[in-house]
Every structure is written in structure tokens, then in C-alpha cells.
Length: 88
Image (cartoon, rainbow, N blue to C red; front, side, top):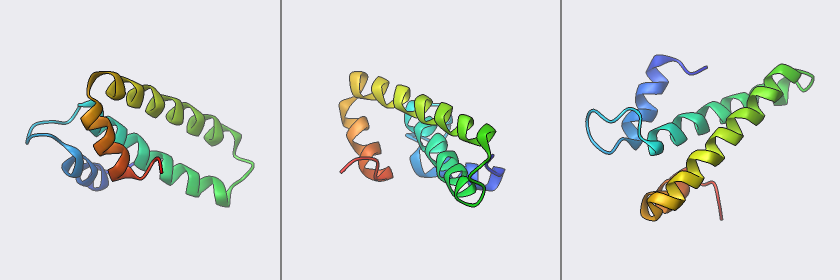
């Protein structure tokens, strides 16, 4: 779980306008940050199956959000992919 300070920073980096807190781009950024933190936790605790299941659910959620962006706003999709470094 992200602290409110980290969450505000991630939202600030990816929001479209000042009051944007729930757009697909912001959601993808937040989920990606949570995935990074959970992946680092699993490197130290490889037998934590509950966290592994949560990680897989988050990856699935991010994939669905990215599919939505790709279908509805290809420019935003390319920008967020490049910014987060998700594909080559």
C-alpha cells in the first residue's frame, strides 16, 4: 500500500489537469507503483503466496486499463507506456 505522500507524488506526475485523480493514466501510474513495491517485497519474501496473488491481480488490472487506453486514446497509451517503461 502506498503512503499518501507517495500517492500524491505519483498522481501529480501523471494527472492531466489540477483536479484529475481518477483518469486511466493516473490509475495505471498508481497500480504500476504498487506493483513495483510488491515485487520488491516478494524478492525478500518468496513464499508469501497471498502477496503473489495480489500482485497478479494488480498486473491484470493494469493490463485492462492499458487495453482501455489503447482502444480509446492511443496517444495517451503511447505516452504512459513510454513514461513508465513498460514496453520496449
